Length: 475
Ligand code: ADP
Image (cartoon, rainbow, N blue to C red; front, side, top):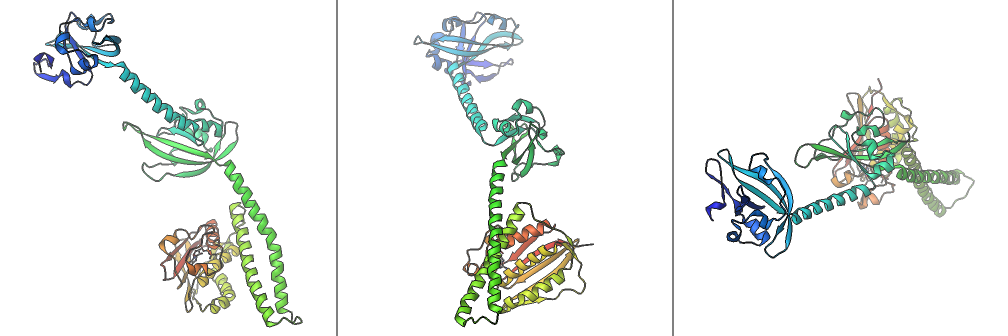
């Protein structure tokens, strides 16, 4: 490497070699004669080093801008310009230059020109533009409203769907707090989002520009800003009005159908009761056997209809709950009397020894019975012959926890996650052998939670199950 291709520091030490610079570099003296050029420049324009050293710069760059001499007089520290280069093969290349003086012992000794083939620059710019357009097209055409906000929740960007859903245009929102969309009373600091945590989801009613409201489901994600300078929040939301309407219609249909079914089913129940009890009717034993089967099937149907009615009431938000202080012991004793015959026929024993003094719970009398009936009926259904069911209470703070423990088939870890879901029943053959709708525990959960309590289960497959529910203690 010839020594002239090295740039020296004021102290005379070599700082770096010109060939190490990735950009095309060229050094000229005060009269714009070329002193050195690096490999990148030579390769770009097709010249050999020996041939161009000593040439005037204009020979390669015929259209240099005026004022480059100012760099020598210390009047400019840098000049940027675009110019055409004459390549060795006669072709022209447009280049983008950055020129700066080289100062040694306080004096300008040369000028360094760093240049780039502008095609590279325009290719990079085109790629950036393409990526930006691509990203913009995705965001703009998303059916979800997307608001990007800073940590203070001021809107930085809003897409088209935000306008379609709320009526607010991006110019209405950008720079303003996103909380303008939120229901009155919502506070910025009330809702904390942690980076990396599971995305929080909220169901809300956003304000519309026309003064109306729109139901939305909002998800939040905290995204680190590129370059690690900070974070921003992406709040994306979907319009729930259509889904709500469809859900509402479906729910209304189920409610009306179940309601209409209940009349004929209860009529069949009444007629069967009369047939079994009226001594004047001579029903032969074979016929009686068939009728008993019809009665059993009809009871199952009635159970299903009642469950469907209860589910559609909860989903329509029409569940009527009236809480009063209730004597849970009396409720359980009443149910034990009703259910013992069924338990005995399955070879299952109830065990219940309530403590002599028990606090009253705050509950709806009818719904409390429904909760207990469902749990006790399951404890019989999913028990084994010779098994038992133990009912217990425990006061914990302001709550009374009641448990129903059976010695039955138990529930696997996997199934335990799903038992409170609507219509879910285990695939287990022992479960499928029993009649059921998969609605009982869903209803139990809804009712308990509506009365301010919680419900949960502990179980191991093959080792029985214990269901717990809490209710507030009446003071
Ligand atoms: P159903 O009993 O009508 O199927 P539930 O909603 O009451 O519906 O219960 C849902 C499912 O949970 C049952 O199908 C069963 O798989 C499981 N399960 C509920 N209670 C018990 C229990 N005591 N022991 C074992 N499995 C149970």
